Image 1: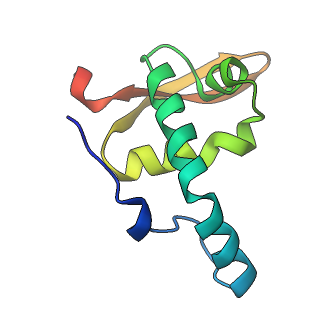
Image 2: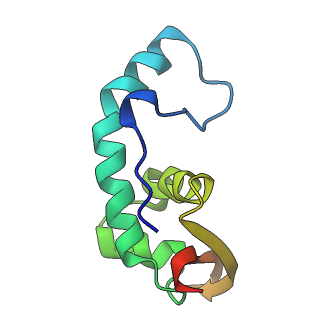
Length: 99
């Protein structure tokens, strides 16, 4: 499944952040979000949790959590469970085309 998102008509999946500053920032960051989203997608393998993927990318989890939301909204990934990792519990995803 090769789903492409039209970055120029991308929906802002965040809630309640529709003031002028947020809209401007979102528009400016769209290309970077797509790039990071593709990086996140490459690391999803049905075994790694969200924190492990964040560590592999060298980013804090809060900086990439929206990419998981976008991939899920696009139907590219699905949540398959939770994993205990470093004394916390994180979500594990799989790619839908790997069922």
